[in-house]
Amino acid sequence: MNEFWDEMTSRGPGEVVVGGVPVGPGSRVRLRPGKQADVFDLVLDGRVAVVESVEQDDEGAFHVAVTLDDDPGRDLGEARLPGHRFFYSAEEIEPLGSPARVLVAGIGNVFLGDDGFGVEVVRRLTEEAAVAGMEVVDFGIRGMDLAYALQRDYAGVVFVDAAARGQAPGTLTVLEPELPDEGGTLVEAHGMDPVRVLRLARQLGRIPPLVRVVCCEPASVEEAAFELSEPVRAMVGEAASLVKSLVMEMIAESTIPGSRDPAPR
Image 1 (cartoon, one colour):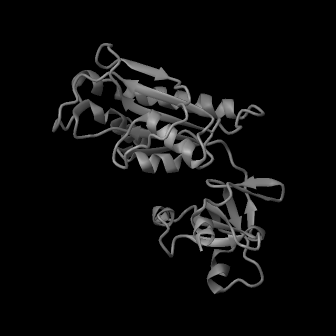
Image 2 (tube, one colour):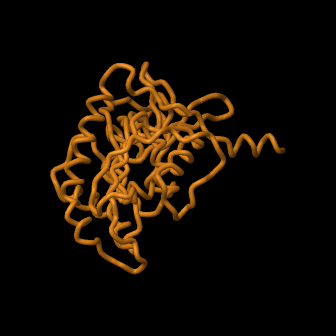
């Protein structure tokens, strides 16, 4: 009985090879339902989807859970709600070209003054012209969500955060953090710290090969201060430009053969 529950709760395989192409979480595929498809499957025939997970049944067959690429409710599928998440066999999907993608994660608490710097930068980025391959997400203090997001096949991640480093308020710094040591410390579900998030992401299975942190020296992180200080707000635009440059560099670097090998676990 225990073996049954251990198997049911175990994590599925990281990827499946389809037509010689590795397919895993984050991969883009075209749906090609088989002959046994129902009417609903036929409606989805030819649609582009994004792989959320790869599962393997007791007989060794692979099943791929996907959400539709253009589904406005795709986040509901990622939350595993019915109607937005679909299963297909490995034979019913066609891998598409997967250009390198870089996640830009805005983190911080908007109720603590300058701690909301990362959130403000990603808001600015969503208003400006997009960089191909860049995905911008406001994670706020949702560290667990960010750790799970890092399990997708991102070539890199750029954290944007406020961090006190003893410099003048508003000073921007780019850090290339060392991979955290193995350990059991987990991130709080509603807390945020890049190193803790990276540690949890590695425990879950994956860290993107390229990691950068763009941090800004805060002037104040007082509770119930709902806006950025003047020196920090003045750097939001420059930080957004800096992030775009880093993303383009990371995408270019990821095209070098061997550069997208998974980071050490």
